[in-house]
Image 1 (cartoon, chains in turn blue, brown):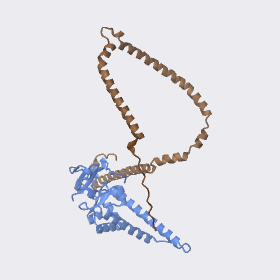
Image 2 (cartoon, one colour; image 1 turned 120 degrees about the horizontal axis):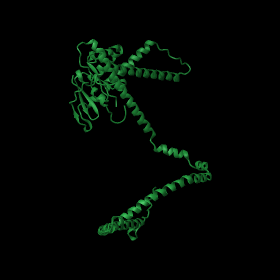
Image 3 (cartoon, chains in turn brown, orange; image 1 turned 60 degrees about the vertical axis):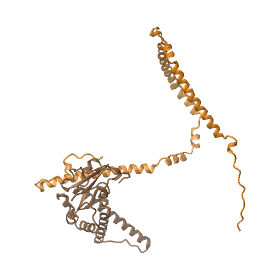
Length: 199
Length: 192
């Protein structure tokens, strides 16, 4: 978020790599929904302005139906989620809340799985609430696709998990309580805490 | 058609013929430095040689302590310090009394408006602003505030996750399992 080396506060380090709960994920999803809505509105405003510029005399304000608006929203949402999950593992909402979508082995999910996951979330967003009662904090989409969402405040924990950067001393003895039943090993180096999922 | 013109070469002056100004200055500096070093050495040597004599003169044996030069000089210094403090106090009082009057008199004779009009204040302010990297300062402070806010939101999310997990799972699962974030049973530290 800021320039310079990102720092995970002491209190948050034990949680890095643990599965994120429903509150964090719902907030992240809400941020994504707002972001997509704003993007859609901006695009629509640009489209209307362009039409007005091209044909100022015969211009009529378009009257889009609710179905068209909903469809456009869902399409953009699916594109947004799938592209970001497949490329960076985190959407803007995930980035704000410090969580990342990973596969069963802690690796980044592929484009197909990201697309299917995005479609499932767009079609049935209530499946997210299952992580509130799931022992492993998995949503229904996570259960179906074998994915999980972990706390990862650092932007790229996956790439850094096996290497020690900048000569930082690395040790894996930190079996934090936050890892708990998820079997998430913590690799703490310097000011950051990187994670490795052992499932 | 291009015509080639031969340019005569300029004769380079012979530097070794006469000493330039820089050489003279360097030589003078070197002489001064060497002289000072020699003076210091001489002073140290003289002080070392004269130390026993000075000690005897300063604290002569068989002379009562109250009559020794060192004691007398110390007494003089004490009295001098008292007088100095008194003089400083009186000078301070005088300055307090006279300075405002003098300043008023001087300021009445100065046209401050004319002076200010002479100064290009806009140019001065422009120079100061150019010297201060204001965008960087704003960027840095904004980034820090944003970073702190994001950390706070994230920590709140983690705390809420743990609270919801505890609240929902106990009634749902009789067989208590370890919380995914069992650390939440401990008080959460404030984000730093």
